[in-house]
Length: 440
Image (cartoon, rainbow, N blue to C red; front, side, top):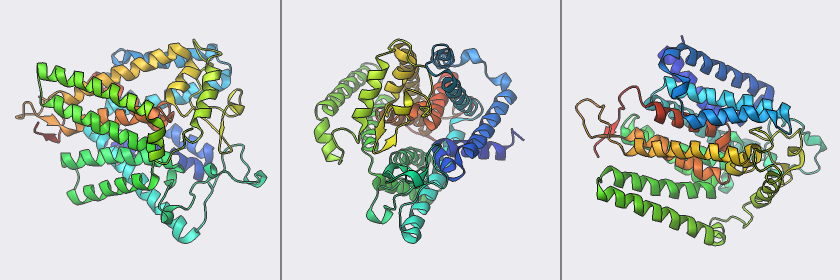
């Protein structure tokens, strides 16, 4: 059954749906129900890896991914909260197991198709959910099952961040969808935009429906109005332009493109840094980035107390243990991550962890770039052609890295899974010829 085409399609799509929209389960059936679903997905991933045990070897996996896994486990020994660390390590390892199973057992085309299915469901259900709230319920909606430790009756005023939907569809946004968060829904829409565009160019979907869902993704981005996504779109456009240039150049011209790209990247970073106030004002953001600056300052102060190896890995912050029980608040809600993946790694694994994780990202980015610009000579009769799906890992990684500056999702759920898939598959290579090739 595990090797049946139907099971493979359903498993991959359902796993990715849950990783991108885990909050829909947590808001509707609670954490225990979500835990059961997550356990089933991890079990399925383990069975896939066991079934394919002759096709992969742990020593061939990216060395910095293995080093990161080892460091999270070792951190339990010096953790300030060993119980919470053990739970965090278990969830991180489980997440990476899912990513490894998808990387080993699925081709890029199959991953692209599964992503397309999962993201269509999330966007479609999100817009339907917001329409029902706006047209029939007509007031903000709270999660069916409150977060652990939260009792709405005891709150004098319910913070806006606690609502599943704030009934803003007919007001033009910022909608939150089934994921209950406008920033998260915006990233889902951005990922969908990339996936649907690649499917359209690669002619792996019907042109009408491909175009329809592409418009849905664009419309959702407009309705969420996330500055992070606008920044990611700029980054993706720049990287895509560089890749297309590199695909068409060779020799000294290619070296010039690399040099020009480095200068452009440095210039963009300087403009973003020096003109941050003006850019934030342009997109309607406050100078404190909606409370993120205060959160970052609190995290930096705490990280400096244990700078070398950190406080111990915990992944998503555990609000029932110190120091996370009173570390950071925003809009009346206790925060469960640093809103910056790199600060979170420093806080939890110290400078050592930051170096290991940074090398994992750097090596994965380098391989993704090479995968995107290298011609695919494995397509029979089409030497020197390029497969449009080869752009998927690099462009998704760019989106994740831009988001990592403002959110910590790179370390959990879809972020960690996509990083794992990209890291492993670009290291092991594709086992089957890429389809959907387009001429250079």
